Length: 320
Image (tube, one colour):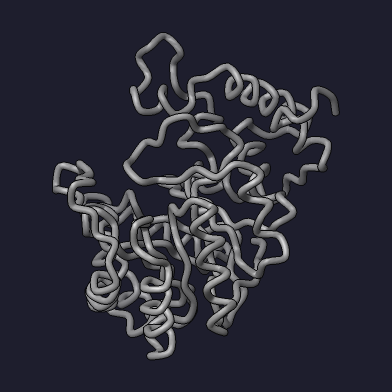
């Protein structure tokens, strides 16, 4: 395992973060085995949120924490202010929940349901551009000073809003943003898969250099696009096609396959390595559901890409 330092977090954080969005009581035995494997392999960061697993992930984590007595050894990332998700898994953006009081409500809800008295990292799951960043940051800073969270940041915020929040923290003398969590991958995403989600490009990712803000990428493997698992005959899920099915992405996939052959790994490994090898220092949230998928992610840590290879994969250059 490889590790990265995150401002406000007392222990080094593993660069592979275990995601819990797929958790369900129906797969509890498999989930426990995957979490055990992750920890045995040196992983120590778990990413969750109130509506993950349609509001069941946190309860499953509590059972695992209690049965393993290992909460103190882990870095827990929790999130607030996600729009309502109904039991059928449908997102309802008409129930937008980005308000200071809902930050507090979600925080106490999640602390209770995970059995934690503190979250190492706490993130807003969405943004509300009409709301001044001061109202959001002040509430997060209040909870940090209360000792309920150790560090804070955002998920799915556009770069201009992140910059505004960063500058506000500097003006106020706050410890400030520690983590930024957009989706960042080798792919260029044209249409967001869910309302309010933000997909960073290379320029967005590069902004983090020298800022003491760690980029945590969700969907760093582009939802399996670089595993080449989706048929191109029109039968792939519509949201996947709208997000990823473009000529430039298929060229990136082709180049990832080419480099994978040279390095003895799969194209999905090259795509994940693209994220992890960025000079800004990036952690990637993975959602491994099997030993095979997890081993593939671990294998990626051995793949190192040069600047020339990064440029080639991103189509900035046509030669290595």
